[in-house]
Image (spheres, rainbow, N blue to C red):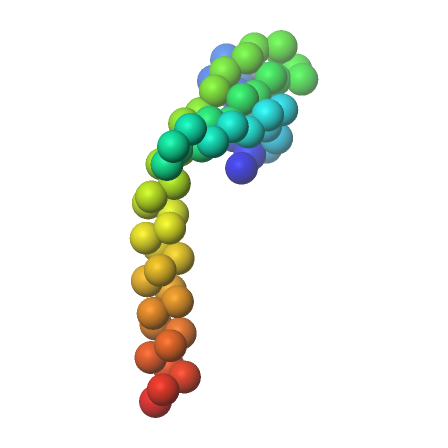
Length: 64
Ligand SMILES: [Zn+2]
């Protein structure tokens, strides 16, 4: 997932590495403009819940 540089606010920076830690994903970034490095942690459970809900809605539609 792309992120914005917290230092110079350059947008759409792709992660240089993605690591999964339990139910969390850690994306590491390095800004090509100012060389600032940072990491963003995202909770995977929030995403899987969203996917489960979507799949449920799809099943309901198919049944109707
Ligand atoms: Zn930057």
